[in-house]
Image (cartoon, rainbow, N blue to C red):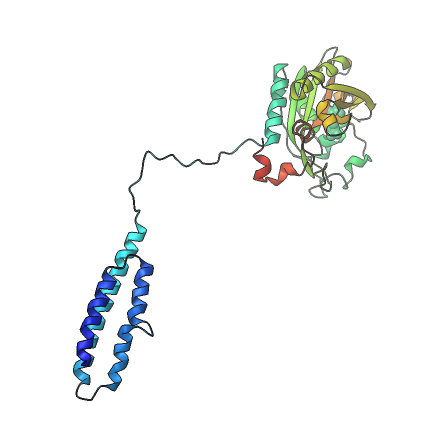
Length: 334
Ligand code: DAH
């Protein structure tokens, strides 16, 4: 067959294949079939070399025309297929179910704090707060803590610089002083807040955690008011079977000072009978003097406890660090 007669059938077949390619992959297969190294059109080009001098110009012209036509068709079909791939195949179906977006939840510490606050509000306590960056005066001196007390040691306290020694408060007790300086008695406040200590993180310690401070000042306040209040709140929070035990202790800002142990089925579940849960006591006369209250006229009690402790008992959590890792698998359980 003459060379030029071979061109036409290949062109017709190639055009047909290109125009009817159904996908970009399919189109690429067709391209390789004709223009690849072993392609049918490529084979025609290779034959050019064996043509006589006379035949060559006409054959070259013919083949170049076909080549440009096929290339144009290939590009056109590619554009069509690309456009189709970009646009949705179907119109939006407004009756299909919507996509659910995951909803955030309250952090367990936020929830427990809110519940504690709610219980105290029922019995007339207001919420107060104070700064986390404190002076030694509010955190220690005004609370009658001796200058050589180990709690002040840089081992326990984060000092911000050494000149006038501001620090990160080690407890919320500093807010007792601030509240009493601000308002005259009687006082009935709680103070939820973040505190800091130079502890190495482990299952029961973290360099930052949360406390709730309580302060109640009026005339003729007694230890039994303290016991009754604390018992009411803990029963609300952790169930009716809660038992509390008060043990003598020492804090510089209370006299007498007590530590509260806590027992309940939840504690037994954790393999213990009693858990130390709070410190408390009757406000020390020295503290009253420091804020200008007359200790002969006023009496009061104070307490402080850790919020993480309560949350751990309530939810059966055995590692305090889980509260700060913000692992969604943990947070989603509450
Ligand atoms: N501030 C104490 C602590 O961080 C807790 C505490 C004990 C607070 C006795 C008080 C109190 O108000 O009276 O361990």
